Each structure stands twice: as C-alpha cells, then as structure tokens.
Length: 445
Ligand code: DOR
Figure 1 (cartoon, protein in one colour):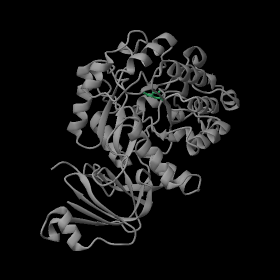
Figure 2 (figure 1 turned 60 degrees about the vertical axis):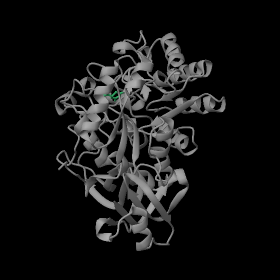
Figure 3 (figure 1 turned 180 degrees about the horizontal axis):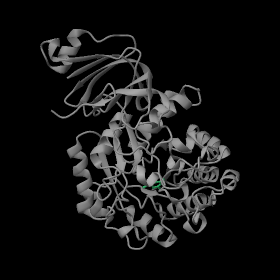
C-alpha cells in the first residue's frame, strides 16, 4: 500500500497536468486527488482499509513528475538465440531503468517467433523476469521468409499483441495484402518495417551529401517511403490495421498524413535517435550511429517532429537494438544496424526537446504512454482510478553520465555513451510493485 504525495502528475488520458496525490492498493490506483488539496489521514486509512498509517508506505514527490509507465512499442530482446546481445531479463531491467513498464518484443530472434510455443516462451520469460510487462510481437511470415503466413489467430491466443517481420520489410505486396486481410481476424495491428530492399541495396547510411563525403553506400529515402505508401494503400483497400515502425523520412510523414485524411487505419512511430541525430552526425569510427532506417537529413528530422506535434505520427518507440561490442567494433560498413535505446531515450528527449521547449511534457507522455497503450490495446497508459499502478517518478533535475557500467542492458551500442544527460526516472512501479529505485533495479528477495 502506497501514498504518493505532492507529485506533479502528467496524465494526458485524464487531461491532468497538475499537483496530485495518489493512493495505491492491490496493484491499482485506488484514489487520485488533484490540485493543492491534500488527502486527510482519515481518507487515506479509509481508502486503503488499514487502521494505522505505519502500514502505508509514503513517498513525497515534491519537485518530481509522476507519469503513467511508458509503453515502448518496439524493442529487440534477442531471446531466444542471441542472448549474448541481450535476453528478456536484461532487456526488462533496461526497460524499467529507462521508465518503460510495458514493451513489445520483436520477433526477429533465432528462431523467429512464428509458433504459439515461442510466443508463450517470450511471454513467460517476461513474467519470470518480473519487471516490465513483456508483450510478444509474432512474425507475419513463417521463418521471416516473406511468403507463407503464420497462424495469427493461434499466435494471438498465445499472447501476441501485434504481428511483424520487423528487421525485414515484406517485399511481396501480395503477401502484405493477404497478411492485412488475415490479421483482421485478430483485431491486432500489423507492424510494418518499411524497407524496399531493391532500393536499399547494400547501403549503410542515408544517401545524400554526408554519405558521399564519407564514401559510404547510401540508402535513399524512397527505400522507406515507397513501402509506406504501398502499405497505407493496402490497409485502405483491405480495411486492415497497419502500424508503421521507425518512420524516418518526410515523404513517409506526408503519405501517412494523407492516409489518415482518407480514413485509413494507420498509426506510426518515431525513434528518438531519428529526432536527435542526423546523417551529419555519422562517424566512420563509431558504428553506434549505424541504424536502420538510417539517421535522417536535418530536413526530414524537422518534418518528423512536426508530424508528432500535429498528430500525424502517433507515438515514440525506441527500437532498442542491442548488439555485442565485438560486432559493433567492426568497420562501419560491416557492423550490424542498431542503437541501444531503452536507458537513454527518455533523458535524451527530455534534455534536447523538453528543456529546449520543442515539446511539452504532456505531449511527450501522450506519445509514449497513452497512445501506444491504446493502439495495441494494452492495460496502462493512464493513472485514472482503477488502472494498474504502472508509474514513473521522474526527476527533471537528475543528471547522469551514461557509462558502460551503469547500463543494465548487456549492450553498450548507444551514441550517448560517455555523454551527460538530464532528466531521469528515479522510481518505477509495475502493478504497484516497486521495481526501480534511485536508478537501481530493486532485486527480488
Ligand atoms: O537498426 C535496426 N536494428 N533496425 C532494425 O530494423 C532491426 C534492428 C535489429 O534487430 O538489430
């Protein structure tokens, strides 16, 4: 039982950005009192059904924000098969340290998550870790071969909340069309990694002046946007539900905006690295800047932020993609694509966008908690009375240097390594259980 006092609650689902106190009982929000009015001791005891205050844990959150737990619709936890990069336990630790209480784990593991047994395995490993809520995303096609569809209805029964061959674009429009039709039986969105491989070729960064200067093969923006257009049209034709992963080009934003106007059931996410870094930042000697889709041009980046602010793009997601140091030490062109994101994402956006007044805290939380929870029909996303107590106490003043030792993730492939960031979660609860305190995981007793 918990009494959280004097926090600044940001809960866009209830339209609240105000001083508040909350009572937590049986893993849920039992009462919320907003404004300067304080709960009386009597009210606390009555609501929580105890006779003495000593039975109630009290936390004074003066000067801190309270957010509904963040929901990350895009992480790679690598289990089964590549546990040297990450596993579901280490990924879950990284998640809650970063303020994420729910994550959608992508299916590009080894083997890929294309059977009900594998979906159940991911879900159970998440439960065993006992930290963030881990929701499996199942493959669209068997073995990620891009041809034969998986048994989506059965996979949903096993716990899948979405379907995706993320990591690979589905090259055949016919397969995509069928998949959209079939996924309608589940009501779950299909998450599309939009990448036309005939256009992407052997590229390793965004095609443009910067790639020419570095002498690296470029990926044209069209490799993404033509497939966004294709998938939007297919969703429109079939009445299917599509979610576009990691949008990184202005043309994709234009297409999604037009598709929404046409009433197509489309949503989209943006990754923090695409909002904070550009192709001009790419360093030949640091493959932590190598990611797919690649870092955008400055112009693209501006349109991405506009798209988030005007509601064209629905959510933020990390695309947390851990890789071993050995792999990332290879020459830029040969290193794998991916940025480790869970533990730096919120602080980096806070520092670069919120503190610079480019985005309001209320919008940030809408994009990172309410909207993904709604789109993927998950619990959470708000702290209204009766909701699960998935909560983040956030200290806007907390400064920290990102070091290899401090990360809970097994991997360190982040461009923010050795950088100082400001604004971090200091306490995180999942279903009322404290899982992170003072930047450290609360270990199981
Ligand atoms: O950079 C990326 N890494 N993009 C993806 O789509 C896949 C991911 C990975 O799995 O490493």
